[in-house]
Image (tube, rainbow, N blue to C red; front, top):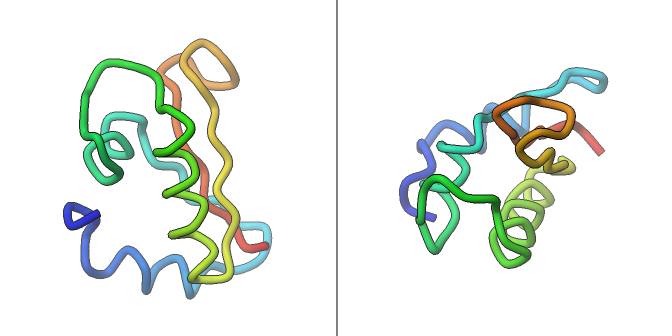
Length: 79
């Protein structure tokens, strides 16, 4: 998870309830191993993103390609 920007955790910690931070799938895939682009996130990557979000009192929701968003994305929000 070394590719996650240093200040991203600070941003998550300061999120207001009701505010959602949307992260494109290509960034999520580079932040959480195994770092293989152009595919859906697997269960381990999603679990890693959820664990990372929980450290800052947030929840991570994953929306796959073709779902709620055409490109697929992950959304961080306050728990």
